[in-house]
Length: 386
Image (cartoon, rainbow, N blue to C red; front, side):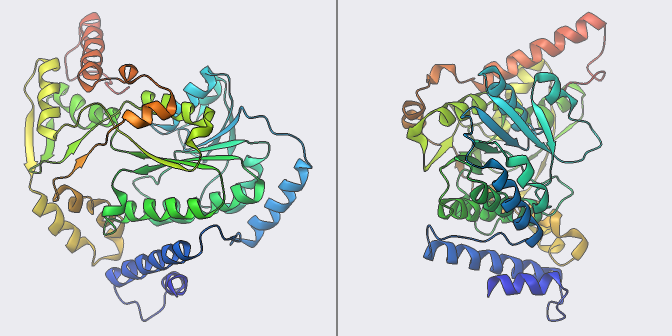
């Protein structure tokens, strides 16, 4: 029934008159799919796209029993903040890395320069996936939708197609990145999708590992560190949500430890930094290391929630409303963190190797301010992104 509702939305069923009704229908369809997954664990699924299914069978037949090297790795979302760090770490550890790359304006030459192989493919086109999976032992799925894309198209439909293809191609390991606490917020589209994808992956029969992430330190650079250097407005909210940020290089290191370990098979683990910070605490750290005061403008969470309610009524603004749904999480003043003691033991990693946020920001500002001094520039000049 849920999938029929989604079909009605796609074909423009006249019974669905508003954007809100359409979005509720899609959510109902996903919820129906999740309920079906929960009731039929470990059942076989079929590839929905016929053309994709034919190519899966054809590509699989090419394997003909040829053994696949355990060091053969496919990274999906390899050009992203996390994906590129997984690529670098895997290459450093001697893996043969293949990257699924969508056609894009900015070339992925840097991946090839590092030593990886790139293959064209798109999660929104299931027929493009089978060829990319030939000869692959492990998939690391770090992909997510771009800001201008519908969340459901990539993060749900695309991931389902990838998992189905992995089943058909006999992929032996699948690593998926989710969000910490996603099960507590079904009202937030991306978090609901992540939880449903976790369940779909669990039901697939694949050997999987799920990492639930709290937040990236790299995001702090774009949102707070750079604007403070450029003397621009820093936007914040009035919530007290705390986030245990982690360096994506550390996430990549722990990911590869999981790929090597049989102990992580079928496990779902949260990756969190050593300490959780509020946004005001993060801004204070940036001010301290930058030697400058931030021009902070706070937006009440209630305003974000109101904006989302208004945007829900319009077809053209639905994707923006999906992203504003995180206001519901902020209003709960949650702590995005978890104990890592058992995770470090399971992965065989030393907690002292994990980067502290204070050290990360200090190193960043030291490099940037030194560069500015060397070139005689001002804080408004230059590209501060790493």
